[in-house]
Image (cartoon, rainbow, N blue to C red; front, side, top):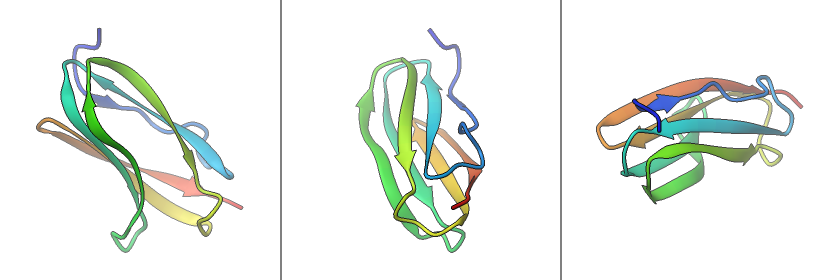
Length: 89
């Protein structure tokens, strides 16, 4: 079991058109994983549910988006972290 909340770098990065986003939860938590453009507009809601402890991987498909830099943000319990990813077409 993971000992702390962790949002891992997506792989691959840069990506075209899909990438994997992984995260770890040390305990059951309400989880929100969203993708935003640089104008802070939400472009994808990947996860919005309560999940048990463990490590998860989510596939993000950016085929409907323009090339550029995007942010993905994990909120789980009191934990919040964001990372950037680059979509190249």
